[in-house]
Length: 148
Image (cartoon, rainbow, N blue to C red; front, side, top):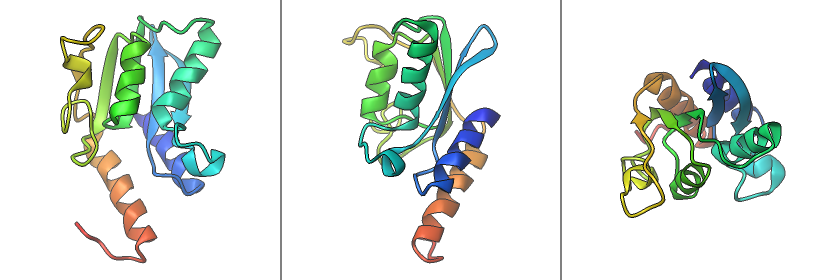
């Protein structure tokens, strides 16, 4: 999760929401990603999508059934769908996203038996650090106003 938090900090450095993602296979980092929507002017450039694309390219295949994905903040619906479609083995999440989370908060895409398969999820790994990064980013964007 520490590497996902580093990627989140990199996202914040170019004014993107600080979310980072790391794809690991057999204990080895295969790819990392950070939110890049602002810098790339791409609505799909979420950390998870960036990392999944890089992992697929590095491995030469789209199926990542042996990968564990570490993400600093709970994935949205788009990213949860991408994780599901990549057939990842496991997802580890830092902070929950009560507003847009799709892996337990608002929805639970990775545990819906009606979909392709289900993905085991571990929650609250580095949650405080992830939540602090988000909170500080948005307080700074609001000119120092903390809306709680």
